[in-house]
Image 1: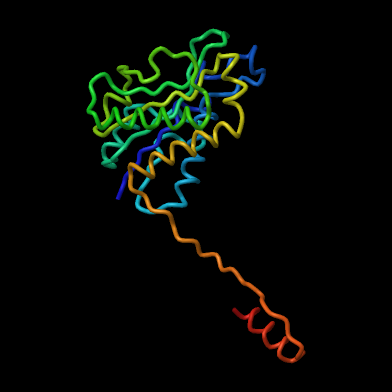
Image 2: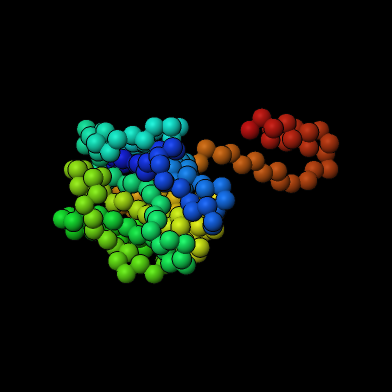
Length: 223
């Protein structure tokens, strides 16, 4: 059974974590963007079996759950993989930006494989490559450092980029990110597609005998 720890970064009211007002007048909060992708991941994974999932942030966003609480829960859950969804900042209203995937500074090849697979899949799906010189980055982030399993912190575009913001605000972008991530989770977690329970009825034939036609129709309705 593949065990996934999923974290939407920050909380709804975390100070400063929002889109730049000059680009997005609504100043959309980062947690909303993060959580939307996480929720889509959960929805898409529901089509598969062979996994367990723990959501580490507050589903309402009202509380910015401490990082130590998140990593402790993931470690106690004995997750096979930890994925933290974020959106970046730091380009100060320029046209720069793009996807960045982070790991801790000292990691195994297994973690590096996760990092590259996720980055490649999300960029291929969204086209949001950007101009990052180190899109496969390493940093001393708590979530990457304190977890006992392979961990990737994925920055899904910049909230202060004139290029990225109009894209990352869309439902289509979030759906593409989630679809790409799930494709990697399915492959690496060996998840199995659930069998469809749909029943398809097919009516065939034409009959000169009225009573026979009614009988066939009744049988089809009862099927």
